[in-house]
Length: 242
Ligand code: TTP
Image 1 (cartoon, rainbow, N blue to C red):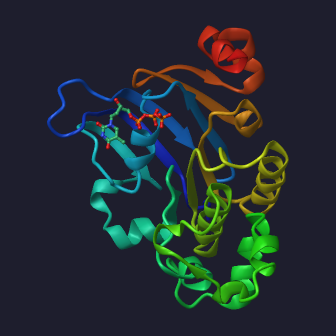
Image 2 (image 1 turned 135 degrees about the vertical axis):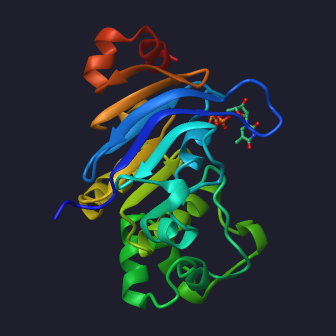
């Protein structure tokens, strides 16, 4: 059987309600199970908006977003959340214990599953260091953990649900380069069969992706591997050098 988690955008155009200019124009790409597709581009290029179309935070104005060949507009939310996990740019922790937060998408997850997810997310150490471990309280909005810890807890929360598709919106930006590298190595091993779409600002975060999409003003202006883009894309070169 074909592995699940294939994502396809077909000529997708999107504008926010009330806005005249489209934020995304004619976006087409495919991400296969086992692949990592990275999206890079300047601020406001439309990267977050692109990710949001898969879990239907918004719907395309024209074109189609398909999950395993089916337009997401024909799937219900439960079917999508079962298969797709998104770690948003400003990941949210609610008031409750770390365990509650990690079990958000899978209430029946065992402690062992939580620790496995924390280990991959490079968060096991700091949770272990807390006297109450998984029972440690998170304050509303997660203000009593650092930005990098919050990102890692939210990555662990996504891992607990074992989705077919991971969407990471700049999820590694608050991590130091070494932690970022360790996390992504562990993630790659853990999510070998999954489809990963990752928005990244740092070249080291995205350089090993199977395909990099260079987004500029809502359009894919270049695509390829890191090596290909270094040769062919002046936009990519500018991003790398900045
Ligand atoms: P984004 O999709 O947020 O662009 P980005 O993710 O590439 O930017 P960054 O790297 O800074 O995260 O925004 C694209 C445009 O859409 C931008 O002009 C702001 C607008 N926008 C809205 O109007 N409403 C929204 O809810 C969002 C997310 C963006």
